[in-house]
Length: 382
Image (cartoon, rainbow, N blue to C red; front, side, top):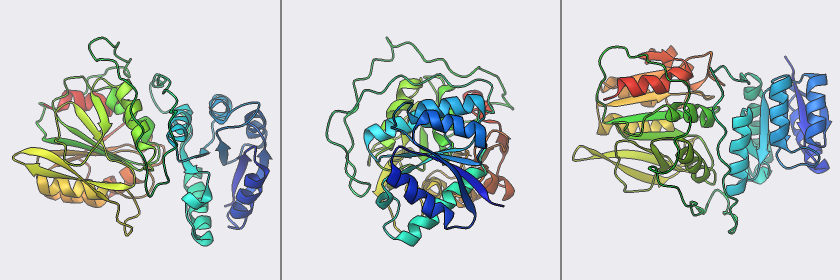
């Protein structure tokens, strides 16, 4: 079956190059091109493509506004192209919240230096996105994130040597109004259980899914939380800041050597691996260079595997939406050590890959809809 694609970009060179790469696969047909967001919205409704590739900065209508319009009129899977900068991360996260499924760097050299590898990655990503489920399967959309202040400093370097921009001043939790969380629902299943660590792994669709889950947790959540989201190095600082503004628990990017604390969620930095050690009963973060032999940096299997060794039988692992099967082996190790595993259900997953791999392997103790996971954590973790 041929996948139809609409390319939306104001750069004639980029439209031509992307069309050539996708068409060469024999599995993909570019059925239309648009030079701005408004044209993209109109062609999306007319052509009904299987996938739309979208630039974020265009005349007449920008990419984020176009995504919102497409999701209102006729939802279709959207793959965003953006720059690997702090500002690019901010805009991309806005696009994902608006309904885009996934993103790739617009500079092809940042995807792969070898042309054959570049073609393979682009084609696989488009085909994967074609099988996704755009549009909300949720009770209500999450509230929009407050605008992230523009970063005025120098742009971060490429993924090999990213710079972390300084976080903007954050209002104190005592004076700042609490964000509106998804509708509270009580779904306790038996008495609450104590866990030394709650670990969550996700990929495609994860930024919005994590937002839904973490916003449902109270400020006094009793367990430390570690997060593994497949994301470039220059994106994770902006993502952590965004979650921190929206959630009642504290969320920040993990740093090597820091200790896990109840009510604090630590996000694995992009381009590296995060492991958790046991230091006298308390978790300690180790951030290691990304191993080129591993497809994912950060990798859910690496973090979950370390928790299986450090906190056997005392960890709760959750696998949310994402393509591929990262997390399955880590969950297997955790399960063998006596820990519990939950996974997201198919209906609410943008791409039912990672949670499906865990469920099909018989590792899931509970399979939950996305909007049930946060309340289940709030009720079931002591």
